[in-house]
Structures are given as C-alpha cells and as structure tokens.
Image (cartoon, rainbow, N blue to C red; front, side, top):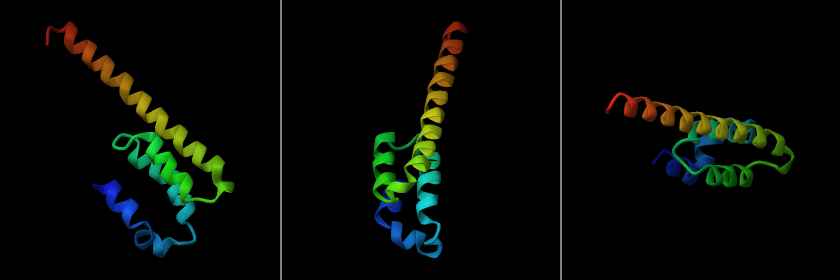
Length: 88
C-alpha cells in the first residue's frame, strides 16, 4: 500500500524537497522497499524518475537492496534449518 501511494503521488510527496528528489529516490527507495516490492519494479521506477547521470547512485542503491534481500534469504534459510534440527 505504501508503494502504491508513493508511486501514485510522487510529485505531491516530494514537492517540498524538489531539489533533492532525484537523490532521495535513487538512494532511499531501494533501501525502503527492498523486501516488499520486486527489485526489478523498484529499479525500473527509480530509473524512470531520476536523470540518467545518476545511474551510479541508482546502482549503489540497488546493490544495497540486493544485499539486504540476499541477507534476509540466508538468515531465513539458516533459521529454518535450525528449527528443523530441533524437530520443529
């Protein structure tokens, strides 16, 4: 629901910070929505809303999001394995 609200109202929500909007989009959105929205959707949205010159910033934001998703996947796998070893 937060993603839909953001994507449908981006201009209104970022108007007060218009100077920094591209930077906020490129750095913050991947870190906030990495686990709830498919990363390719996040990346597509981000790239569509920032200048091409910010590609490196988008790359770093997406790298961070991919790291978080990988980390979560590994932690869940380890937790599941632990529970199964304990007979749960």
